[in-house]
Length: 70
Image 1 (spheres, rainbow, N blue to C red):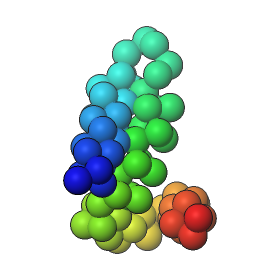
Image 2 (tube, rainbow, N blue to C red; image 1 turned 135 degrees about the vertical axis):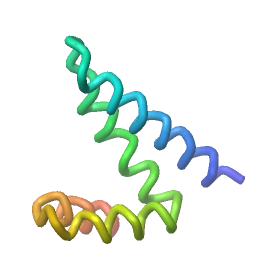
Image 3 (tube, helix red, strand yellow; image 1 turned 45 degrees about the horizontal axis):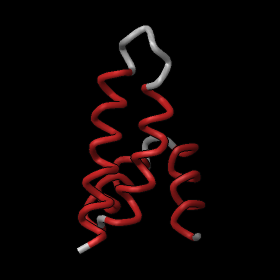
Image 4 (cartoon, rainbow, N blue to C red; image 1 turned 90 degrees about the horizontal axis):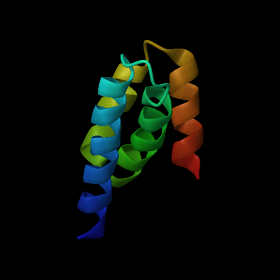
């Protein structure tokens, strides 16, 4: 019950972060960086999808691997 709620909140952070990324306020990147770990830790489907697409960005994939080990 709690995992879908946390994943939903993380997804909301990511969506709002992408919208805020293009505004003059520098809040978009921190919101995405807060939301992605929440989503990847609480949604196995999104975790697989993000890891599959992260292989094109080795630095990002390394960060996700470190987060996943904790």
